[in-house]
Amino acid sequence: MNVVIWVQYDTVATKDKAKGKSLLGSAFAALDKPKGSANIVGVVESVPMPINKLDTIDKRELVNVDHDLVLVTGHDVDLAPILKEAEELGLDTDKFVLDRTVLIPGFTLEKYKELRHSDLSILSMGWWAGIAYHKLGLPELSPTIGMYTSEEHFMNFLPEARWHLQKDLHFERTEYNHDLGINYPIFWLDGTQWAMNGFTNDADALETWNERKDKINWSNVLVTMHTASPAVLERFNCLPYAKKACFVPFETELESGFYVDPQLCGGNLLQAAEGIATGAVQAYDVWDLLLYGKKTPIK
Image (cartoon, rainbow, N blue to C red; front, side, top):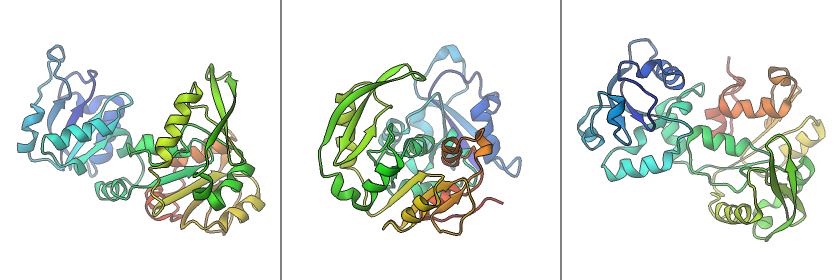
């Protein structure tokens, strides 16, 4: 596999040391299996910085370089503008992938391309959707990002989610988050309360919600939540969604019930569930979950 490193910031010192940088190095190691099967054929800087003294190629010349994958590295990189630039340069955007995405267990470029073209919308009770979109560098085709609601309200919302989302969001109040050190807005939507702790003011939260709710791809929706209640899981399992996952701290035969051991995250079920999205908790194949809604244990 011929790999091009696309450097989106200035922390890679030389082409030879590219594989040694923590996240980038781990990502390259994941691709280089069996060892020696991956080869760096070039380094591209998004903005050339002579101070770095990188042995780089001009990104306009990348179209002439034989490569199978472009590994994008940088701090908290947003893939969307890079893909736009790549398209303008006549490059195959299907070959571009973030270093953090490669580290999700079971990654293959074929699976990633399939997922990227599927226009997946994730409706989640908490931050699961936002975490997954960020880790994967995918377009955020869901309003339930940067916020949370209760089990009861989420279960009231889901059966008729499409209907509820046609209603207006109404600002109620702000609350202070001591951990984040911010005030965040709380809204009501047709009888369900949403705490938008990914935002610091109601205007931005409302604008973002309205933009994202119109992007939902109702033909490919994944619904996720977590609960410690077998009764809630049974109700969730009956919901009319082809792809759904409820993360629970107990063994279950229900198709939508995904057992995770909270002790993997200090007894915190929420963190254990979010670990599935990032690959930190290697209990299930997240690619099968996102693509097909399948519960495939990682052996």
